[in-house]
Image 1 (tube, rainbow, N blue to C red):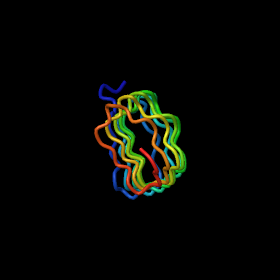
Image 2: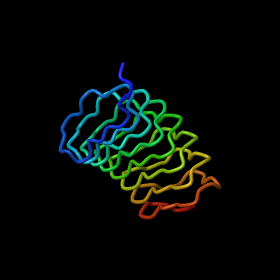
Image 3: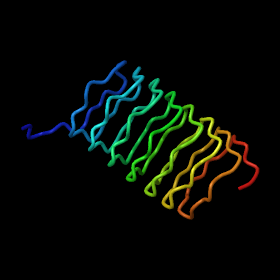
Length: 159
């Protein structure tokens, strides 16, 4: 048995087109800035995933303990169900028209520069919401925890 199981893999900006199978002990995966069109199955203990700046069109099922997901600047049209532990979601600059239900732990959401027409109910713990440059006509109820709201360049008629 390996006494030092691999916990972090950083494949950032390597011009990769495919990732190898990932070790089950992996907690942090950084693979931004490649040419990945798909990701392999994600390990169950993964807590941090940065797969931004790739031509990804889909994401695999997200691990239960994931708390940070950075998937901006891809070609995603949908996101899988979000884990209940997610605190940070950055999914800007994709082709998303809807978002899945947001977990109650979410504190930071950047979903700008998508063709979103509606946002789901916000987490009661949300502090930062960036939904600029979408096609939103309305916003969900804004919780009192919200500190930053960026909603320019939408079709909002009321707040």
